[in-house]
Length: 464
Length: 92
Image (cartoon, rainbow over all chains, first blue to last red; front, side):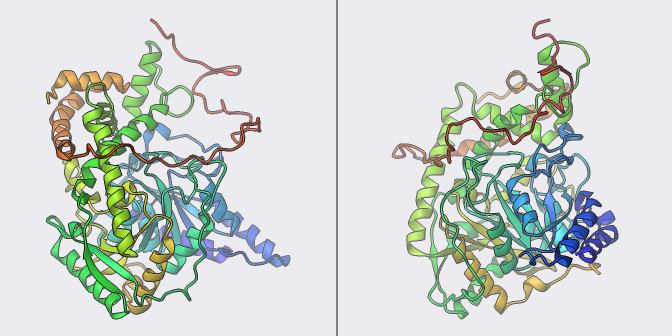
């Protein structure tokens, strides 16, 4: 195990000065690996994730260690507890090699909004890796860790997975405990894995999933087992929702998804066009509900109990206002302002409550479609990776990157991005969505796709 | 909808943010565009929607148990006094 941990840290030393996937690597992992070696030397059984190197998004804490959410307001903050998802993976033998970069408080689609440094795409360092979990996606793509975890509120796992050519999976809302995750939008946040293969994503998922009494929103539903022997796609019904192929989606991306549909058809799946009529309104719905919940969640950063505190004269109010003003970055403030507006007296019904009604309609439309088909196949992102700096001055342009991923969060659905092909030399992710709690259908089809194609084995330049 | 400097300043006060003049300028320009975009939802017919389904919380038994946060929850307080968080005067 020690060799595996050493190899991961060495690869990070080789690649990360250019890519910036990590905010901090963990030299402690060498001691943890040595302890794992000692465990095995004394006859203990090999655990399912023994020696698997894991990168963890820096909005998930490890007890006693710094966790920043890439924000200055938490620059020196140390986690009080290791979160459930991370703890479960460590108990199965995973070795945490470092904490990965993100857009501040997971607000962004490019990992440029980090208060510390941007992360770059290993396929072309002039391009963004996607976000907000860009660091975790890059860690896996550039082989600085075998696997990683992140959080997905509106696509923050799937979109960077698409841009970096790896698998990214957001399970059903409530499937994995969020205990220990620094909350962004509590009705949307979900933790999930980054891997090269669907099989590994399923293994990590099974390691993390299941009820947790420390998270009141974690589900008590049984987690269905799955193994690679279950990869029959014959007669599986796959829908192509026409709204996900509309204007704004690059033709090169559409072509990759159409070719993937042909792969599934060749395996015996039944492909049909379907419709989610209100999908075009999902992005507007998301950019009301998410800032509303974020502005409420971020009220806890007040300069009183932990984190940055600016006390340069004045009263209690000034501590709040100055600590928040100086601790938060521009995008975080923008979302707090949007959230405050849509919840404010006189506007809440037209914005926040209306968004929740549209969200309910969207859920009904997905429920209806999943009576007809087992899976939906769509692009993950409207485009491939874009150059750094091209969307940072126009917030709406950045929000459009989430166009095709937010519906799954609004409808609580499991969704996976997996490498589906290339466009102009860059990876393109295809997205598989299933009905609530039906993760198994995604694993089955995704694994079958990877058995028939080799897009997931493509490696970015300069990896070795 | 009127989104002017006064509204931005009012929202900043509600959100406990001491924005600089430059930030107020920028948000006065940006927020109307974002709110116009999300405002498209007002054209969606939703009168047949009654309520929004929310997740059923997973509640433990209401009994006293040790906190997982450990004894020193005040350990990272910027300023403390014994078992209390210390703050500047509420009114001044």
